[in-house]
Length: 231
Image (cartoon, rainbow, N blue to C red; front, side, top):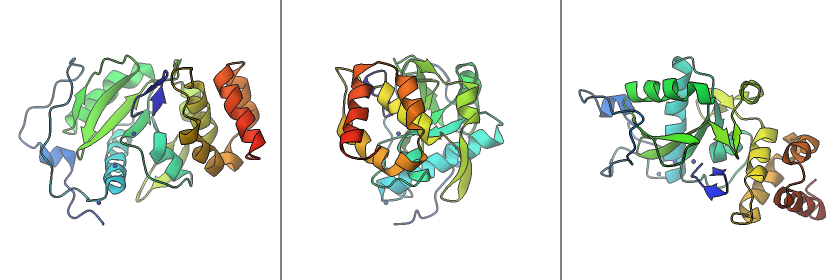
């Protein structure tokens, strides 16, 4: 997921043989510290992970989503896995993204840690990070300088991510966040264009325009979409 002008991911080999739950992998070990200012420790390659990276990312998304659902936390899947859930195609990005409200971030971190996942605080102050099945997971509570709100999570649609149903960020909110993150230092139209093409019929483009205001980079991208007859 691109956030605040930087590439944050945001953010997963044939069918996975005998995937282990993260909690099984760490059975008997002390729960990892939550909120410590440290990066993830290097992990050895696990032979029971799926060989295809896209499938590994999907398995991590399913596991984290199931844990958050059992914990009763308001959340929504975001990033490239959310695009896939809405019908987009192509390779997934290099991690899994979930959105939570800022006031819920600490409780979400504790739930993931109790499930056996490594949870830590990165230098960026708009997310926390976790590791599941060897994949990076971003728990985001601010999208493009805007706090994740209850309204945004209420607009999420419950969709299947393979075998697990979970709330998925609405297409309009997905595109608004991607466009709002454009800046003079980060303006990768090529990465967002196929997403806009795939989801164009599901996006309220008038609302995207209103939410992005007069910012020049989102306006330039919307102009490009018009010239390409995407919108």
